[in-house]
Image (tube, rainbow, N blue to C red; front, side, top):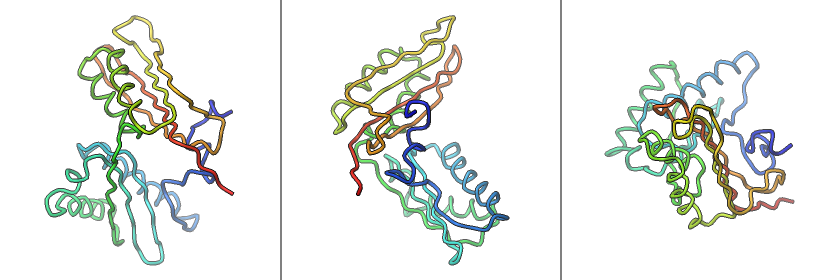
Length: 213
C-alpha cells in the first residue's frame, strides 16, 4: 500500500509531523483551515522566492501564529532589515482581519539537492526554459548523488519532447523503500508549463531511517 498513497501522509504521526498544528472548536475549524491555505498559497504563488515548506503553528489562547518557512534563499526572503517579513505580516493581518501576533522563522536549506521540493522547483524552471528533459534529469541526478542520501526517484510525465502521446520518464537510484514506515521519505510534486502542454513532476528522496521506540 505504500506505493498507492502519499508518502508523507502515510508516515504522519509516526516519523512525520503535521504542517498545521493547532486545536480549535468545530465551528471555527473551517475558517482557520482556510486561513492556513490562504497563507501558504500567497507565499508560494505571489512571493517570487523558492520556498520548500511552510508549517503553521497556532496558539489560540495567546493569539499567536508561528510560521516556519524553509527556503534556500533566506536573505532574499527576509529582505533588508526584515522589510519583506514586515510586509508579509501586515498583508496577512489586513487581508484576513487577524488580531493575532504573527511570528515568522525562516530556516535555511543547506543542502537543497537533498530536499524534494527544491529539486522539483529546479526541474520545473529548466523544463520551462525548453531544456531537453533527459538532460535536465541527468544533470540533477549527478548533483543528488553527491548529497548525503540513500536513494531517490525522479518521474516526469506528459508530452515529453513534444511527443503526440503522453508518456512517463523516470530515473531511480539507490533505495526508496516506500513500504517502510521508519524510512524518512521526502516527497514533492510540481507542474511545468511548456510549449506542448503541462508536465507533471514527482520527486522521492530517501535520506535516512528514523528508529523510534
